[in-house]
Length: 434
Ligand SMILES: Nc1ncnc2c1ncn2[C@@H]1O[C@H](COP(=O)(O)OP(=O)(O)OP(=O)(O)O)[C@@H](O)[C@H]1O
Image: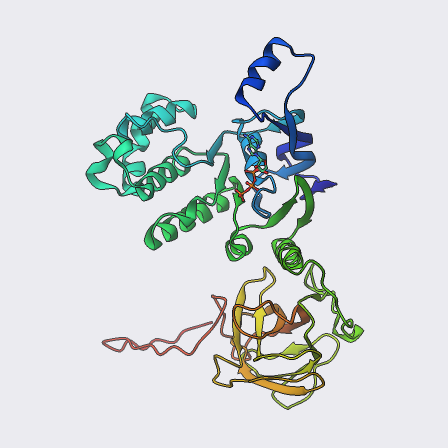
């Protein structure tokens, strides 16, 4: 599959027909024998990557997702230049700063300070350039006096801090991050996120491997899913994450049987690239007749439009096909990147639904307001026996709708707008022109 993230832009990374074969030897001595008798291979070959074609334009933030062992790290190591592909061509335009195996570029005997200089030089910075940046790096890492201790005495958290501080402060043109953010403490994670965002905003091409679908949706503007060493799917993050989640749950279930398709009128392709409903689940029960009513109680038209902060009623039915020990039904309202902005379920709203028999039907109504920034949103509905069980039905993009700007002319600066009271002391009354 040829995965072109975007056409007609300057390319930062180009991978052509990349494959990687690892050789595994049953006995270590077989490796030696092969050196002396190269005609007869004693190795088992394992193809971690097969025929990867990928072009990443400059300035793009790309999320890489895939199950454990799918080949993500191998791919990133090839881009970072720490691993050579068995076949194919890699072209990388720009200075790469990679945060792959944490601290892999650190010498354990050197102090943090010495390692900063050592790494900076490896990344192509002059002594003067590193000296100029040292304070910024040390204050980002925020590890106090440990900066002058050998890194072998560091905790894994300190390692992450220093490695990240170096990676993001050397003016990278291409930044490659592999789940490193999962390690530091909360304050540090926020600092990393902010820094990564500002690098992305300044046009740094970023590759971000993560199992955290929320982070991929929030940070990235495109995503690639690797499966069994091949590019399985690429596109906008939400579409890729939906495919990924579907594949993960399908593997758990082995096969998924969908007993019926959604009615055609619930498919809206406007505004959202991924507006087609995607359904998964074990089908012990199905969610049917999904309706969203406006404040007047009217059912929404083909292209639903709602007022800012309008109260809506979401109505859905659960049709039971196999016995359920209990039942939780819920929903999410998501923005076009798939970030969940509003959501709840019957359990959290104190409606415990007990055992259900085949043939039973339930009607569930949720009433809520939409204090959302004007734009397009999608509805996800889902049901499960309990929080840990596999969903019996999960429908992303069950419906897409538009929220209009407030009549008052107020500009909504954040994703969600809640009532806020303001006091100014002493009162200074001047006419505000909007
Ligand atoms: N040096 C190696 N020798 C042999 N096999 C390897 C080597 N490195 C990786 N592999 C294999 O290649 C496959 C892909 O590994 P890789 O680390 O790229 O996966 P990944 O998607 O990054 O996984 P994870 O999410 O667990 O980090 C795995 O099956 C792994 O066992």
